[in-house]
Length: 159
Image 1 (tube, rainbow, N blue to C red):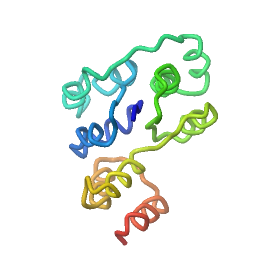
Image 2: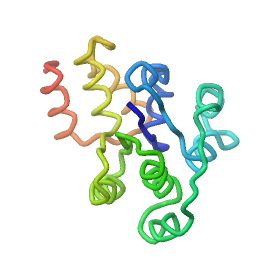
Image 3: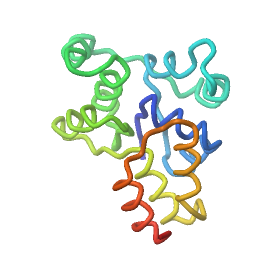
Image 4: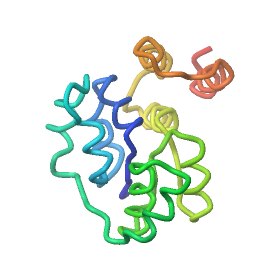
């Protein structure tokens, strides 16, 4: 399965030291150039890890008009994720931000986020537990609402 990933999920999996899990779950991970540039910018805490893992996964978009139109409501990385998913025929868009998820859905793209990937990985037996990984993300400053946290733990059968 071909998947295009945005910055926040990319950083999330770097924090969790699970970037290679993405390779295990999906046949091809594509990182838009703007996302790679943002995630590996100077002094980014996990930039080196992402650069090493992702350097051969970066693609540029062709449709600059579509990108410009999307940038009226989304940031550059989110816009490139959607355009690149359309251009490459990706089966999945990995993005956490709600507005970008909604726009991708309107474009008839399949969408998941970091938590969805963790649940999928557990279902496939690639990870033992989701809750400690959520706790690590929260400890690193990622916001996960209490309702989402509880629902995720419930779905993962980790109450």
